[in-house]
Each structure stands twice: as C-alpha cells, then as structure tokens.
Image (tube, rainbow, N blue to C red; front, side):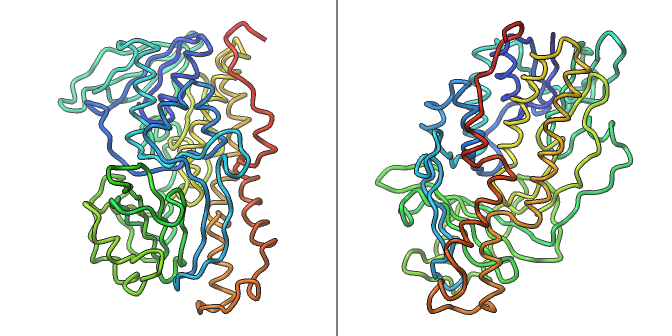
Length: 419
C-alpha cells in the first residue's frame, strides 16, 4: 500500500504520521515553496490531543503551547455567566492545547520528516489534477511559481488534504456552489499581555449582534507575560476574502468594544497592543454527499470546512487521519478502505458542521443575551440555571465526540497485518 497526500497542513502531516506508525508508505506534496509558520491560532481538544499523544508528540506540543484549564463565559458588561474546567482539569486523560497553527505544524512536519525521511515531504508541488484506474492512481503536479509540469506521481491511493481551496474537491464536485457566509466576520490578533484570569483560561464574552470576543493564551513569554490570542466576531453583511493570512484593520471593529473595560481586562487597550490584525469571514460549506471516488478521497477542510465556533476544525482533521489509517490497515482493497473511512467520518463531521452553525459552545452567550434582552443581570441564577448551562455544553461535546464517554474507547494505532 502506498499513499499520496496532497497538502502539507495539519491533516496531511497527521495522516502521514498515522500511516508511518501503521507501516503504510506515503509521500506528502505541499504547494507552498516552504513550510512557514503562517495562519491563525487553534485549540486542540482532548479527542484530538489523544491521537497526537499516541503518535508520541505530547512533550513537543506541551513545550510550544498553553494547556488550557477552563472556559469562562461573560456578557458584554463583564459579568460572569458560567465557568467549567477543560482538558485535564476536567478529568480528561489528555490536555487541551491552545497553540499557534504554525507551531503545531512545525511539530507535525518535523516528526514526519524524521520518521519518513526528507524525500517523503516535498514543497513547491501544486496539485493540478489526478486520474485513476483499477491498478492505481496518478497525481499531476506543477511548479506553483513557473507553472511548469512536474513528474507525475503514482500510488494506490490519493488523499486530498489541500484545505479550503482544494483542487481535488473541485474536481470531484465541479458543480458545488460557493462557500456559505454565516453573516459574521472575524478579526484576529495576538497580544503580549499579563496573564488574564487563571493564565490558562479560554474566555468567550458578549454576543455576535453587538460584538463577541474569544480570548486565550497560547504561550508563556519572558517576565511572566504571555502571548494571548484574540478573535473579535461581529454580525456584518461584509464578506471578506477567504484567506487565513488576509490583513485587517483595527478601526473596522474596535468601536464595538470601546466600553469593554472590566476589572479583569481593558479590552480596547488589549486590542490596540496587537502587532497585526487578520480578517476572515465565518464561512463553511454544506456537507458533501460523498468524499471518495475509487482510490481518491478528501480529508480535513477539503472534506468538511466548518465555521470555527467549536474549536473543532483542526481536531476533526486529526480524527479523519486516524480513521483513514485504521481503514487502510483493516482493508487490503484501497477502494473498500476509502469507502469504510467515508462511512465512518462523513456523517459524524456533517453533524459537527451543523452544530457549529446552530448550537456551538458559545450558544450559552446567545441564550443569556436573549433572556436578558442584552442588559446586565443581578444574579445569573435568576436568568438561567447552572444545570441548564452545563447541559448545553455537554450536548455539543457529545456531537463533536469530545465527551469523556466517547474517548474511553480510543485504542492504539495497529500496524498493517496486526489484529
């Protein structure tokens, strides 16, 4: 068995590591001329961090991240709505990592190169199409700088991990419509700041109609300070280009947070201290009816782009990688393996896409905003019970597969030919 992986992102490199552990040969082809620490900050929840621990990456990830300890929800007046423990503080065997995408990619790519060999990871190879027959699959590549054709590559299976703008997805589903804009635009940045709350808190505050913030640290720095990630989300008809590295302007959104000065954070000052701002529309696409055609399939954002409201985009790509490796171990026929992978993961990720649209974890903020009429409360208990808040949180965890019961059944990755 030999696999071509199109795309050197989180899903692509995790798949490479899962395949290497299972004894299945693979090569990674990335369009960018070099792997650079670009992109945004993400959270790796315990269902995904367990898979990375199985791959032997826990120590490396711990050194370049913050182990998140709690979620804290506030209204736009700075009043605490709900707190719950996260990661190991919540009793999980594995942590929740708050980490820059570039740092996570560095760990994954470094491990892949060390275990597969430098020749198995090629940059500057842009996929231009594919073909297949009963004996195998062929991927065609070009040099992204010159457009010149590169040697065709042959394998038993092609897996598209080429992200939001997947060439392979477009080839498989040429009639698919445009991305769906949620009506919410996001601005992101990283600010060096003193620890906020516990110094390992994920803060969600406000609501989309008037302005919502997500704030959490991603790395400790010198002098007891931290790099703190933030995301500003506001309902707006404006739909920016879908590019994770698109620059944004502070003046386009800071007005919504001008009065956010709390005893735990001066939000306007915090935002102004960021070195750079990125802008991205909150978009997704309707779940596809199928991912796999013969020996070709999709994984991660190429398969199921979702709005980033449940910290699940990267996590679901990591779970895809594990499921696909398991299927290739279990089935000698590549076509049967891809069908089994799709049958397991497509319905699950479709449910997460829909949950992120309707009832992600921040639905707690929406519920309080609606019940209070966007006004301060005297006691949160008079608005909503702690039991109801906990139930809303647990419901999303079950849909996303990050509840403790779901994780209890995770097993090590077997090798080809082992039971």
